[in-house]
Length: 318
Image (tube, rainbow, N blue to C red):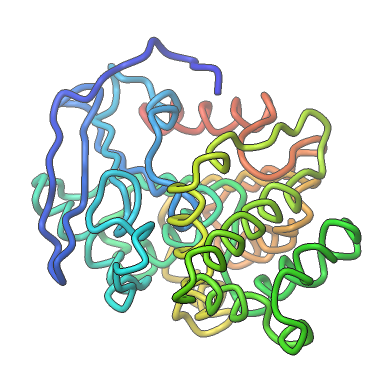
């Protein structure tokens, strides 16, 4: 992703013990005296890559990035089939964010999240609204049962050949049921070849259902077998439980965001995460500015989507 600001390195970092045998990797960049901001990466399981730093003016912000449980540089690694995911839920992550905020002695901060990070950002802001100064979300998701069904089954109408391969990877007797459950079972299979096939095909479908806009490029991280396994295990784990949140809870509770300035950025070509998710949220959250971008898809691959997010961080820096 092109950088709007010069590349910066962290000035501080560490491993925070969040309990349950988990250590969460965190880093701070920019100005120690700057406006605090925390990044919530996608996936679940993507990790906080360096490109997130470029969304902020390093002279104006104290930028906090961390890798959520089980991914990136946090330990134990979810790529290891022996790593239990029992203590890896949305509610655990919400507690981790608060523990990190207190560890860094931050009173409140701007929260920026994309894709799965938008779900987590909403859940955090609705749980701790007094700790959120502003909220910027792009590629907005709520991770509901309906959204999971849409991606794993209904998007087959857009990519029928690719979806058929995705479906037919699971055993024949499970193809008419929950595909995310079927993949989760394969990823827990004692046979390493079964696990690897499931991870490879899950990530192949992940790269397909977001390929709805011109200029889409395959994600090179899926070529890494360790990343594939980590990502597939965590996504299927969270999706099969619909993020442990009641359906429509994030929309229903968005009234708690009243008074928090926000920006929502969503591409009209983001078909796998339909734009009505962001639109419905904006109807309940009066302090949010909604940007529906005509040529953008999922993520910040489109220059104008990137520009809107950067403009939002510049606006809130003032």
